[in-house]
Image 1 (cartoon, rainbow, N blue to C red):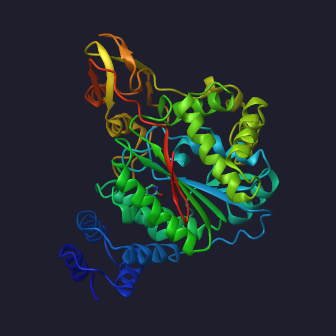
Image 2 (image 1 turned 30 degrees about the horizontal axis):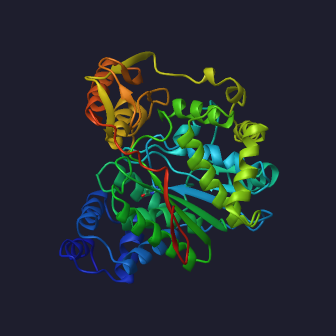
Image 3 (image 1 turned 135 degrees about the horizontal axis):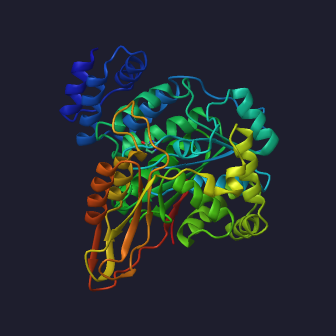
Length: 441
Ligand code: URA
């Protein structure tokens, strides 16, 4: 067997066997297959797709490329949540302390930014001193002590995915159902939680731009999770505009704190409450979504979720003062309003372009080794259906480099379509996928 033949096979739309997939994953993990051959293979997958069987084999090969975490020392049913990736998507940082403050253990493994989308681990690093690389013992201890820990992918947890993820990020090979499903589910299978809630994004800022593809992705992931014995739900949520108003890293953390303080944007709160409800349902803490929602809403009202967030930041070495004084979070030194070129309603936002604008400012990675600038970002003033007058700010850019600021401005202007008629506003949530049904909302 050799990699050249396997790339050629996928180029010619042939199906790969389990042995062939294992050969690719093992070889790449051990550095025996170079990046350029893996990139060519990933591009062939994006163009010619993988079958369900290939996807399942790809997932299992990546999950077993490293350690499988044993979380049995954590008391209770452990829940985790993962998003397929969005712009302004900061729900993990809101729902995790909400759920944990109700006594349900959240043992969460998160990722870094990918393509035009942001990542929870990068956002958390906005807190000085915060560490997402805990030992397994520390991870378990934190979840037992305060019911919440969030870690990055350790070197030996699905290491094949870790390498492939970084390569996909810079080779335009992210937006493929099989690659996304196997990337997410390999980590979830290796990281030991009992319940997995998946936030499958759909729309212009998601990797899946249309509902049918998002549904196919959701079904594929729920099937893989169920076969592996995990309670798995997928919630299909809208990504035709940034979630909330903040896009970046530190700026998103500020919005998280506002939301946990009861002053967050409605769409962000609604999506967070919904996902958190399924985490509670899966854990057995409640038997209806309605009951879950009532409990979760209280955690915001009585500030237990905010206090849990502060405890969590401190437990991983961060300065919890920042949670009560978010103005301490550093923002880019250049603050610039992007003005509307005309009058009308916001009819469309090419949300991936907003994500790219944030990335270009320095908020995301351009190459595998880029260091990101946590202080840059974008604040969205005008969302879908909003009325806007010529020269009114559509968004504010926070930057540290004027050349990058100009580039981001161009992207933001191009991302907005302003027209005469008020558009239909998409729902926040489309449907819920469980092992036996799809419930359309
Ligand atoms: N999140 C992941 O972990 N992997 C993907 O491919 C997309 C989102």
